[in-house]
Length: 397
Image (cartoon, rainbow, N blue to C red; front, side, top):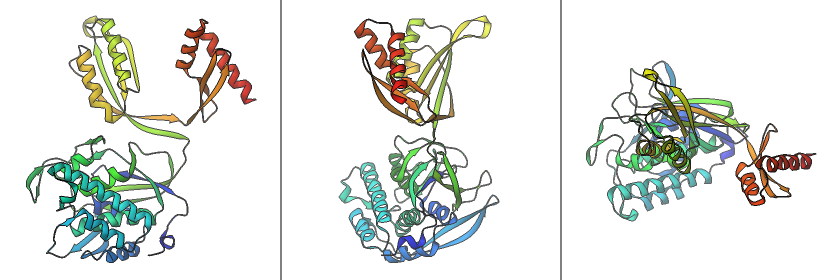
């Protein structure tokens, strides 16, 4: 087994952000990681040890004026289909670092589950076609090896551009995204923009869905290096590249992408609107606000604004349409920053109260705790809050 440490570019563990504005495929990912500094000879050596009939190489190219690295995989023309168990055994016997092996096996297991569901067969009977071919094995193992070489500890991915149109497969013409891709990206934020082409492949989707700890905006980090991996196709509309950004996490503030949903409403009973806000909060909305506004023709109305995790956007939109009279919604993405926080507990004469403590020293008693104690003791809510604040300050001295 190769000594992975001799190829490590950084001593510290890094976070890798996958900026998939032009989608993601296995070869784009390996190219981007190599462009960011992963040892290319080490990747070539690992792929050779697979004995899968694939030869890999790297070359510098440009896409819309951006210099990028292209990862090429040459395979034998005659390729037989492989079962998942055979692929996992090949990876187990290959000469690669243990964490890269575990990641690669996890990615292929995720692929096997997706293919089994798409074809409605037991996972043991799944025959890997495009995904199980030698080039895809080389892509996945190459990517997992490159992550290890770069000391990537965690992966965060942007919302994925899937592309649109149709693609030719062994099963005939299929819509984009391919069925396996759609299954793999269940509950992940996706969109379609740009040329009618498959931008996110099953291989790329499997790596992102398996290894990314979350999807969203660029996490807070001190950037160490960036890399660009070139796709096979060239577009005039945008550079067909996958960008990776590697950096040291700073952890002070958490950045999140949120969906903002808005509607102007001037013909709804206020009681119904209040019920709608309760339902939205119970169903997972991050926040719901209602503002009085003056609408067209001098009509008084309300602006309903809902903040939500992107994955909950559609379910919450359905509640808005069901519970209010609006016929339309404005939807857009915003960035939300959260100060790192911890929870501690203090004792008051009325009972225990949890205190939220921010990384900059700000603090606040948990409202629901104070409300519960106020109702149980019959004292004013403001008195419980004041005692909780005093108990925290006295303990902090």
